[in-house]
Image (cartoon, rainbow, N blue to C red):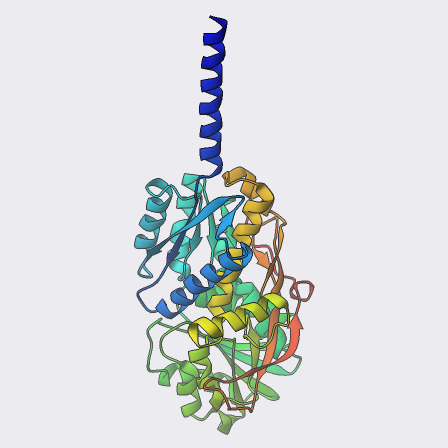
Length: 397
């Protein structure tokens, strides 16, 4: 009887050990939701490439954390809010992912936020920018590695705003544009510059004649330096259209934030133009960025871009969080991630405890006169560090 009991106990212990081992070796499942088709598909492709490189770098090439293999499940939301919402629900419910990353459009990302809350699973927002994501629409399951509208706007306001400067804005008429201008206005006021007008145009606008004329009329009689600041994602390039309308005859300059390399080709026509950028591959000087630039050149025959670095940062954040939490349990991850510092090609980022927004450096730039590349080169005029930015906390918690 005693021997029998011992044998049974041993068998049970072995079974439990096997189960424990199985549980330990369970794959880490991560979903990436991205707008792989639609107007922002170039951004989505970069995010995916960057995420894979970031996971590779953070795991030293093993694609595993604590012996658990990382499985990446990629879903296309077609840049549509309803599709994004469904894709995230399926990722949590059917694919049983531990956490999700996404998405490209701010409107689609906003539709996903309640799904994360209802499912009690983390959504790491990358690369959507709208302030409301970590603002009034935020919930505790939302973290963001992407910069937000305020970080974009503050960097641009600090780059061009000074007493005696008058600014008018042109933006797309949706969350990205409106949140961006709201934050820009707030930041610009602190620089001593004046805002003369703000114009919004539909996302797919191609003819900027009427809106351009209204902006010129608002600025042309103002004294001192006069600047039209443009915030635009994807599609038509308003800068070129505005330039064709000859703002120089009124002494009006154009300004905008950094952008993806294909869009920077158009900036070659604007040597000396100033703005604020989230990333340009030649600016950050650190070993991670060096690795990213050289590996990306090797694999894709091109330097890494704006959204590549965002995806990369998301990959590093995920690995850092799981390593710190020693788990993929949501509550343990939240506890690990609040206030967590992690390294990226842009240097240190930190998830702010209050709203889970990643605070990070931004870069004031001037467009170089060097035209040796297919795109405009951005020269750093000033690194805008976390402490320089004073990014407002906008969630109503």
